[in-house]
Image (cartoon, rainbow over all chains, first blue to last red; front, side, top):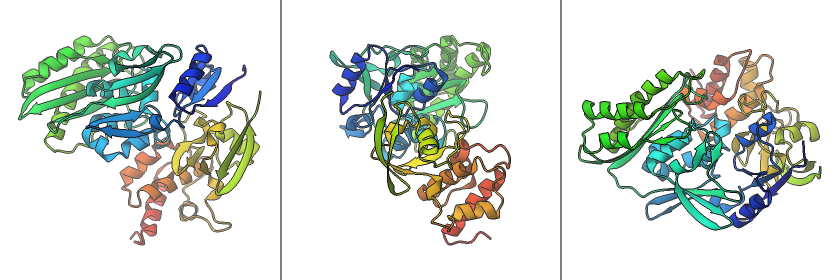
Length: 294
Length: 161
C-alpha cells in the first residue's frame, strides 16, 4: 500500500484545500462505514483521508425559519434523536435510520450515503422526495444542487475535484404536509433495498395539493418521478389516481437483474411501494402514526 | 509510513499510542494496547464483535480509524467489570448460558449495555432490532435476548416474574 495521509480539517475551506491538493486521491472521512470497507476491499485507495467531523457545521442540525440544515457528516443516530426534524420529515428520518445496524447508525451519515452514490441508498430517495438541497463548497466557492442532481451514476457524484458536500437543507413546510419512505428487502433488517420509494405530500383537506415521488434501486441514479407526482396532484388518492401514479413509477424503471430482484419484479414493486408510501404520508398528515418498517 | 501520535481516554484511563494513518481502532486496541476483548469477526461492520462506545455512542471499532480516537472517550469490554465485580449483564450472560464459544459475547455485552443506558425498558422487539448488528453463530439469540430482558427488569428494580 502506498503512503496514506490522515488529515483533520479545521473548517470547510481547509477541507476543500486538502481535497484539491490531493488531486483526485482525496477521500472525505465522515462516518467511514463505506470508506473503510472500500479501503479494506481495495475498491478505494485514498492518498489523503480528510476527516471532517471536527467542522461544527458538518456535524450539527440547525433550524432557520422552518428549514433544517443538517451537516453532511452528522451521524444517523443523532439525526434520529432530533425530535423536531423527525416530526417534520418522518419519512426522511426513518430512511436515514434504516441504514445498517445500531453500530453503523452511530457513525453513518446522510451526506455519506449520498456521496457513496449507490442507486440503492436508503436516505437518497427520501431526500429527493423531500426536495432536499445539497450544499457544496469548493475552490471556486459555494453552490447548491437538488439532491436528485447530485449523483452521476453508480458510485459517481457530480462533485468536481476539491469540492465537498457540506450540508443538506430540508425546505420549510406547513402542517398539511408529510412524507414516507418504503423499501423492499428480502429480510426484515440489515439489507440493501431491492426497490425504495419516497413520497412527500401536501394536502388541502382531502385533496393532494403538491407531491413529489422518488424511486431508488431501479435506475443508475435515484429518480424523481414527475409523472407519478402529477397523477397524485389534484386527486383524493383514490384508486384511479394511485393506479396511474403506480404505472408512472413502473414506466420510469430501468433496473438491473441481480440476485436481489429481477427487472420484472423491481418494476412491479416500484408501483406497489408508491401506493403504500403515499397512503402512509397522508395518514401522517392526518395525525395517524406509522411505525413504517418496524 | 509516518506514525500518528494519539492521546485518548480508554476505559477512564488516559492513553497514548502511535498508529498508522489507515490502522483501525480495533487493530490498535488489540495489537498495540493488548486489549484483546474486542474481537475481529468480519472487519466490515456487519458482525458487531468489535463493538465499543465512543463518547457513549455504540460503534464498530473495525470501522473507526485509530487517529480518530484523538481526544475521545473510548469504552471497551475490558472496562465493563469493576475489578472482580461483574456487570449485571455479564453475570446474567453466565447464569443463563447466553454464550457458547464466546467470540461474539464482548460485542453483545457492550451493545446491550448501550441499549439499557438509552432505554431501560426495551420491548423484546426493541432488543432484537438494537442487537441486529451483533451476530452469534453458535448459541443463537434467544438466550441472549432473555438475559438482556431480565437484566433490564432487575435494573429497574422489578424482578421478572
